[in-house]
Length: 147
Image (tube, rainbow, N blue to C red; front, side, top):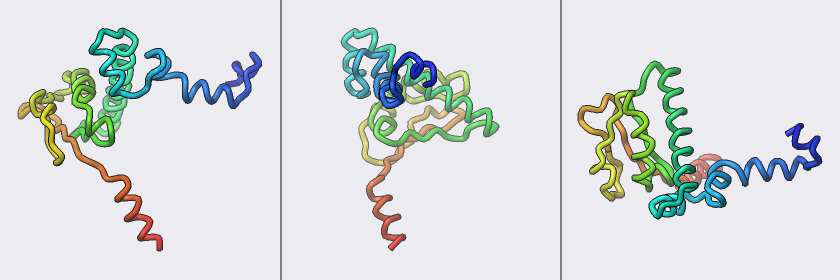
């Protein structure tokens, strides 16, 4: 930030640039919605494909780092909007983790369901699950506990 400020950029503009114009948005040329990036990537857009690879790579790095710190992994749980609803992103993420004994079952991964499910192959050393979240319900529950 200091270098950019010395070049005449205000801190608010620097923050806006870093938080809103970098990452997926910057790499893809203006898109940060995974659904849009997947569609554009499937239609041959190189920048969108690169942004998705970047995203998957950073998730893989976090999983790898946690695996080392924790002394191994028992499970990977996909949750939240992308984790719950994006089979292609789960595939991209897990594909880079095969060397860790993580084996995704592509067919199970692509099946639509509203239930919690395991999507790993039987020979996977790590179980892989998709678990739905209810953030609004959880917030309401916690708010009620405070009353």
